[in-house]
Length: 335
Image (cartoon, rainbow, N blue to C red; front, side, top):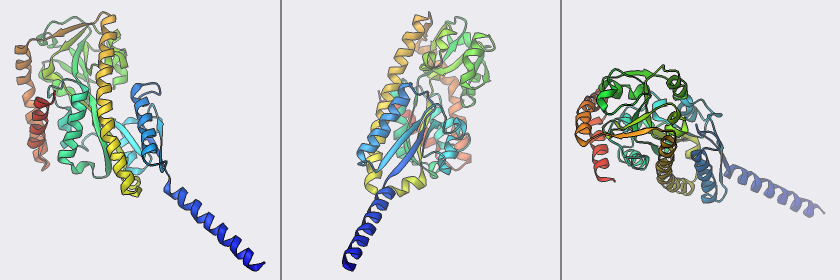
């Protein structure tokens, strides 16, 4: 009888430790995105989470929190470092001053589309592994492009932008100034109302915003000048402590998926731009493509912005000149 009781106790203890180990082997991650629940990017990150669960045989599960419900956008980076967010997505510009070398990605480098930009962003990170990201695990970088000037009144050339009040993010304000216009910084969420009420004469935005923020309803012209085209660069980062708790096998699986989803979201940016352009044209928006000569003249106006970046990076002991050349060379060869 005693032996039977001992045996039962041993079995109970074994089951207890087995269950405990299974619980500890599972990791539940909270992923924060800025887009609303029905946005294609939110859906894509939900797929990302499902693929992570599948690749890790259920050891890692991911719950997506849409519309910044898990963290305000400007605090996503800090909250990922702290562990409030396990996987965070946001604009690099939402961590101002914190990612100086990576600011190269948002310069007016002549991006053709979001796929090209997303592939460059990932290649840049893998090439330089900037220490500014050392407090998180970078899964992948990506972004929206091309970024153009949209105007409320009709324009026919870049010269027509002079003197206009153009809404821009703080990091892109130098582009507006270089064109002789007056930058007005405000959140993207206020752009539609500011344009409709005439507070600003235009805005600097990636094409996707024509539909995503309904800007195509309140502008008349999109000036397609690739010399000003920038990337709205974005990160997908993971809490370092959570990352370090994963097995090497699971880390490798997630890194592989991260490369795959960098490619997928890049292609999705292109598709969203296509739909946004169709939406804007249905609203009567005119797309004005500038001449090659006009692009070359505009590029000359953008050069001081690139020089200023290199100067800033050098003052911080960072290889800004190398990063800029890498990006420029990449864009020349990657079509």
